[in-house]
Every structure is written in structure tokens, then in C-alpha cells.
Amino acid sequence: MEAAVVDVGSKLLKAGFAIPDQTPAMIIPTQMKQMLDDGSVTDNSPADNVTVDPVVRGFIRDWDAIEDLLHHVLYSGLGWEIGNEGQILFTDPLCTPKANKEQLVQLMFETFNISGFYASEQAVLSLYAVGRISGCSVDIGHGKIDIAPVIEGAVHHIASRRFEFGGTDLTNFLAQELGKSNPHVNISLSDVEKIKEQYSCCAEDEVAYQKIQYSCPVEKHTLPDGQVITIGRERYTVGEALFQPCLLGLEAHGIVDQLVRAISTVSSDNQRQLLENTVVCGGTSSMIGFEERFQKESSLSSSAVQPTLVKPPEYMPENLTMYSAWVGGAILAKVVFPQNQHITKGDYDETGPSIVHRKCF
Image (tube, rainbow, N blue to C red; front, side, top):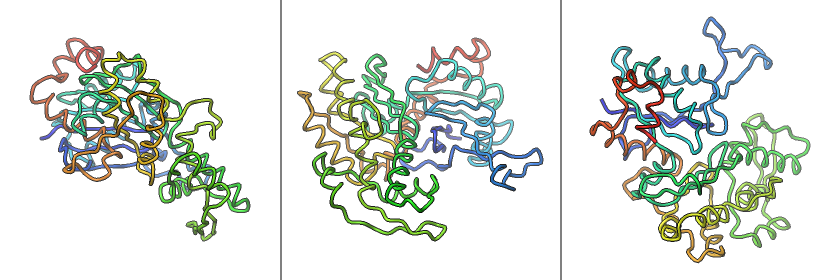
């Protein structure tokens, strides 16, 4: 049986067996509904409709919920049998606390009784997915944005940057903008999320965005409850906020400036290699016009070497940016488990959870 690969995000969990040229077998929401003791869902009234977010801003916060979620994924979804559990590789977000890493490996060996464990940082795996071992990963997640230089398969942590805003903040921003132009319509955040995925795009540059504020075609969109709203310039606000975070009220530089600033702190011998092998991943990066805007901003940057996006190989699945860390994990799993580089049950029993720092990071 192939090793299982699991990428637990704030919004989506991706899981499947280590087959790199295929999409993950499971892509499901990480958010869960609270269950009553008899197993029924609490949906009798809006007050009882309680949801649980086990992962917040990329980090696991509710370990009981994540245990339930992984039980469903591994046994019901991937078909593991109790008493015959296999090996598993997890993707690890940038700046994960050591305690979280230890708690995960403890959960997997002591509760799930796995035969082997490995974890690797998402930035490294996203580069593996496009055939690189050095470069820079820009991960626009649901709850955070990570910028991480990777040199010879290792994250350069001192130069890495983590920003506590992401897709969920962009959704809230779009909701505010739609509320201004549709003041008499109550739009749920779940509907705004779908509108963001369907309509959002990037302006060519800042000048084009300013022009759009005064002149932009308007479309009508019918919500699931039958209400009709108009969408015009709002579709450009999500993409623009990535390059002008001041729109969100944040005193921060745009995503390309942040990338260049991060790389400038690395040894000058490595800067060209890192900038010329930039990978952008995360669902938000797949919006129309994002890649072109990123390259245009790169050409205007103060850096002597312009950031250049790496194209994924043609044999890789479509929409690779949506789950590049999972694909990289599937590639790595084909190496670490056959070559016995992973944590075995014997390793864990001998050393305990702290073994994860010695063998995985």
C-alpha cells in the first residue's frame, strides 16, 4: 500500500495515496459541524448550527476535532483498516510551533497506530512539485501568506516571512465592498466566497485599477435565495489587495515587494537562483490576471534580478497551484519511505515525540 499524504489547510484538507501525477483523492472542507452525542448533526435551529474550525491561520488549534477529521479521512475516505494502518506524510506550514509538531506525531503513533511517519515543510514541497529543490515559495493560503526561500531543499527560516492575512480576509473585504454597492441585500459569507471564486480578477497594474474605479462594466448575479446583486469594480478589489494591502487597512508592502525584501536578506550568491525560481501557490493565486500582474510588478521592482514564476511541468495535474504542497509530498513520500528515512514505530517508542525534530526538520 502506498503511503498516505495529508495536507491540512485552514479551509481545505487534501489527502490521498502518494501518486504524484494525480490529483488528491480527497479534497474536503476542514471546517466541521458539531455532532450531538447520538451522532446527529446540530441543525435544528440556527443557534444550534455550530461549526468547528480545527485549523486556524494554518495551525491546528482543536486536536479533538482534527482527530475525528483524520479518522474519517483515513478509514472511510482512503480505506485504511483498523489494525493494518500504513505510513503517512504530512505537509507542515511555515513557522509551525515545535509543540504542534510533537503533538501531531504523538497523535498518529499513539491513536492511529501508524507504521511510519514523515513531515516536510510546505514551501519545500511546493518547489518539489515543479521539479525544483531551490527557489522561493509564495503561499497565499486561506488564513495566511507565507514567503519562504528554499536552498537545496531546506527553508531559510531567518529570511522567511509570514503574514496573518489570507483568503478569508479577502472574502471579508469583498463582502464589505459588495455591501456598499448592494446596501439592501444581505449576502452571506459563504455566498461571497463563491462570488470571489467566480468573479475575482486582477487589474493590469495600479493605474488600470484606478481607472476601473470610475468606469467598469456591471454584471447582475442571482444569489441562491433569488436576490439579485450587481458586481462591477468589486471583482478587482480582491486581487488589488494582494499588491496594495493598504486597501485592507494594513501597513504592509505588496506581495512582490515582500518577496524581494525577503530575498534581499539572503546571501547574494543565492539571490538570483531564488528569485528566478519563484513558485506561487494557493487558490487565490489562480484568479484571472494574477500571474500577469505578478510579473508586471516584478518588472517594476527595485531588485536587480526580477522574480520569475516557474511553470509547472505539463504532465502534472491541472490547477497544480491549488494543491502543490500535496503533490510535492507525494513525490517525497516515494523517496523517504522506501529509503527508510522516516520515523518508525521503533524510533517513536525509543525517543518519544521529540524524534520529529531530528528526523523530519
